[in-house]
Amino acid sequence: MEKLHDLQQAFQAKIDADEKIEPKDWMPDAYRKTLIRQISQHAHSEIVGMLPEGNWISRAPSLRRKVALLAKVQDEAGHGLYLYSAAETLGIDRETLIDDLHTGKAKYSSIFNYPTLSWADIGAIGWLVDGAAIMNQVMLTRTSYGPYARAMVRICKEESFHQRQGYEILLTLCRGSEAQKEMAQDALNRWWWPSLMMFGPSDKESQHTEQSMLWKIKRKTNDELRQQFVDATVPQAEFLGLSIPDPDLKWNEETGHYEFGEINWDEFWQVVKGNGPCNRERIKARIKAHEEGAWVREAAMAYAKKRKERATAAQKVA
Amino acid sequence: MKKNWPLWEVFIRSKNGLSHKHVGSLHAADAEMAIENARDVYTRRSEGISIWVVESGNITASSPNQTDALFDPANDKVYRHPTFYDLPDEVKHI
Image (tube, rainbow over all chains, first blue to last red; front, side):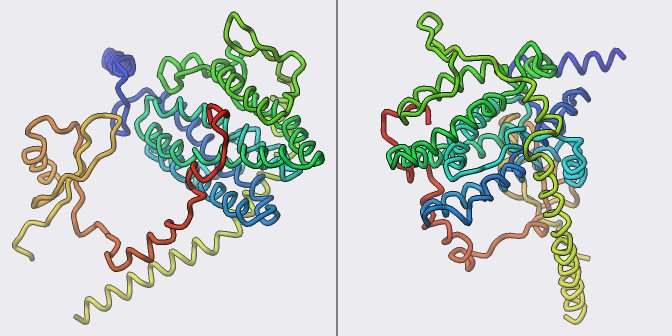
C-alpha cells in the first residue's frame, strides 16, 4: 500500500514537472484506461471520418478538388493508424480496439454521424470540423503521454492543409453564383452547431475533464477550446460573407471574446447515444469494410508464410 | 556456431517525450549484454534515459535501388501541402 502511494506520488510529481510519461514507466491503471479510451476514440474518429468525405470523392467538381479530397481522406487513414499504434503501446491490441468500435462499446466523434448532402459540406467539414479538431489536437501535442504527443505532432503537421482546402472550397462558392453562395450558407447552417458540440459537454457536465487536466492529458477544458474556436472562426465566416446561424452571437468588447447561444445538448446526447442521422449507417459501413477485407488479410498472411517456407527451403539447398 | 558476437543496432531516448533515435551499433553476445554495452559506449555523458537494442539482422531496410520507385510518387503531389491552397492574407488562424 505504502509502495503504491509512493509510485502515485512520483508519477504525479513527474506530471507536475511537465515531464512525459513513456510506455514502460509506471502509471496508475486509471491513467492507462483513460488514455486507451481517449486515444482509441480519437483513432476511430479518423477512420469513421473518412466515410462522409469519401462520399464525395467520385463527385468532386474538378480534378484539383478530387486529388485534394483524396489526399485528405488518405491522410485520415494514416492518422487513424498512428493513433491505434499509440494506443497499442498501452498494452491493448488492435483487434480489441476494432471490435469495441463495431460493437458500439467505443465511441467516435459524433460529428461524423451527420450526412454530407452537398459539395459545400466538404468545404464546411474542412473549415469547421477540421478547424475544431486542429484546435484540440494542437493542445494534445503537449499531452503528458509521450507516444500520443508525438503522434499529434505528426498529425498536426500533416493536417495543416485540410482546413485550408475546405476554406478554399467555400471561398470559391461564395465568390460564385447566388445559388453557390446559398449552398455554402446552407452547409454552414447545418455544420455550425454540430462543430461546437465536437468539443464535448460543458465543463460543469464533463465527467473526465477534471482528472484529465490534473494528469495533463488535456491542457484546456472543453469550454476553453470551444471559445477559442468561436473566436477564430467568426471573422473567417464574415470574410466569406456568410452568417453564423446563432441569433445570440455577439462580440463582447470587455472580455475580448464572442458570446454565443446555448448548444442543444439534447441533440448532442441523442447523437452520442447512437440516434444521430447516420450512426447505424456508419457502423454498418465499417463492419462491412472489415468483413469484406478479411480475405485480403488472410491471403497476405498465407503469402508471407509461403515466402518464408521458400526462403527456408532455399537456404537448406545452399 | 559463429565465433563472432552478433551485431546490434542501438537506439537512445535522450529524454522522455522524445523518440528513441538510432545512434550506432555494437557487438554483444545477447540482448542483455547489448544493453550493458550500449550503456557503456553510448551514454557515458548522460546522453540518454532509455535504450533499445535490435539485432541488426532483424532490421529490414529498403534498397537504395528502390529510391525512385518508393519516393518519387510524392514529388508531384503539391496539394498535400498547405501552401497549395490560395487564401487571402486577411483570413487569420488558418
